Structures are given as structure tokens and as C-alpha cells.
Length: 282
Image (cartoon, rainbow, N blue to C red; front, side, top):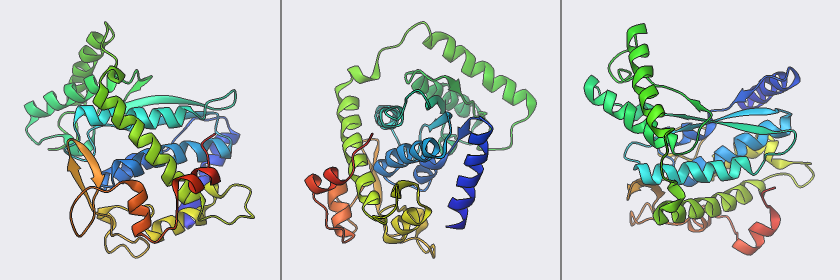
């Protein structure tokens, strides 16, 4: 509760001074092996909170290759789902800026292979038409980058960017990417609705109330495998990589489950009709 409140106060200060805000909440769930639906949901809710607080220019960071084992296809689907929801908030007073970056856990300790991973990740990210490319030095899995290695990493990235600007295909032309993107958008809307349903009905906007998120984490609606034994979280979510995507699975059968099933297993009494009638993305 204290941490969320302090972060919101920080964002309000930035908003008052018309300074852009970047919130790295979404990929921190992926870094803890939460399934892709949670990452997409938190991308939307991070931007939603920034807008509600008065931020005008929002830097949306899209960290690729996370969790480890994410395929380029499923990475693009997840990021396109995030982009669709985040940019649905755009209006005359709110604009997001796309920033792509390689995933921290994707780098191997072998420096030459690290260079290959850097180039591969930047190429995938360029298909999202970013405004900013955040370069992660190829040596990060082995040691902190020196000035020489940062310059070399930027040169590798610059050449990939140069070639991509000559023209690449649209990822949405890939039927698997498009289908997965649509699935994630649908599931994220359901999860947003579930979080919204936790709030106090007297509140003008439960999605910006810190206590809503504290309760969502406590009930396991927002959860991650790495939160196991955390005193404020449920820590019971089980996930696995399937076909390059991170999915929630039934802890008893180890088979993938959709978001409605996961929420019902947590004891939430929801139906798609009732839930989507309660909350809709603006």
C-alpha cells in the first residue's frame, strides 16, 4: 500500500511539471514468470493510472524475450496486445511513446552469442515501429558494460535499425500472431474487469485506488510463480511456456487454462457477460 501510494505521488509530481513518465510495471510480472495475460493487463493499467494522475506523455516500455523461452512470434503478439490497449487511451491530453528493449534474462554469458541475441531482439522490436530503442549491452549476462562495449552494442543495434527502416513485413499478416494478440486482448479485458470488481463501489475510480491492487495481489488475481512465500502475495500461480507463450496452467494437471477458469479457481464468481458489463475499456 505504501509503495503504490508513494509511486503515485511521484507520478503526480512529474505530471504537475509536465515531465514524461515511464512505468516499468508490466515486464516485472513477466520477469517473475507471470503468464502473458497479466503482463498485458498491467501494461494497460500502468498507462491508465498515469493518465488518471494527469501525465500527458507516457513512455511505454516493451521488454522483449521475457520470460525466457518466449518466441519472436508470441513476443510480437504480446506486445501488439499491449500496444492496442495502451494506445486505446490516447486522446488530446494523453500520448504514449513506444520504447522497445531486449529482455534481461535472454542474454547468454557467451559474449559472441550475446551480440547475436542483441541483434535478434532489436530486429523483433523494430517490427513494432518504436519511437525509442533501448539498447542493452551484449555483455550484461557476464559483467557490467564498459564504455567501449556500450558503443559497440549501439553500433550493432544501429545497423539492425538501418536495415529494418528499409522495410519489414507487418507482424499482423501472420495469422498466429494476430490470433494470439486478439486472445490476449480479450483475456486482459476480463482480468481488468475482475480487478475493477474488487473496488469500493463508492470510489470514483477503483482502478487508481492502491487498496484495489493490494487486494488483487492478496487474492492471487495478480500473481506470479516467483511470489511464492511472499507474505503479501498468494504466490500460487503456476505457469509454463507452451509454443513460445507463457500460459497459466492448472496446478494439478499441468494443462493450460484460460483466464476465466483461473479466476473461477480463485473463487471469483464471474461470467463474461456480467464482467464485461461491469467494466469496459475506454
